[in-house]
Image 1 (spheres, rainbow, N blue to C red):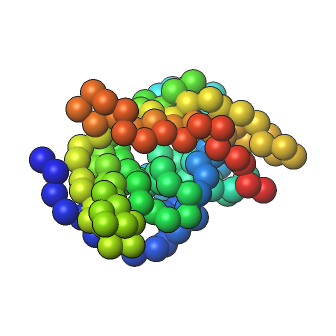
Image 2 (tube, rainbow, N blue to C red):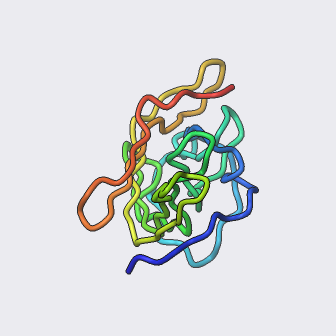
Length: 151
């Protein structure tokens, strides 16, 4: 089902729009209802962040548009985390930008998000996912490729 959706209020991870990176080894509060965690060594736990060194494990929001928040996934629940690829599902929202992005309407659909391409951030021991894709009904809808690491 696709429905109209309005932009969420800025805040948390969603407020730092523009880049997706993922960090290793920092603790974060976890809900008790999350999926089973992938077993990895403590120094291999991967966290999501918009900047080097400040991470959150299993982000609930991933932004696919730089600076304008016109394409994002939210309410994410992760079935795989901490390996070469992280996989989550949630709601993907995209602005149709008709007649333009400022006056466009948001549409929402269930989606799968994949994070991949882990790299070290310069000056930090943390690993960061630097690429992401979102798939709706078997078709790629958005992608972050070669996303720069801020820091």
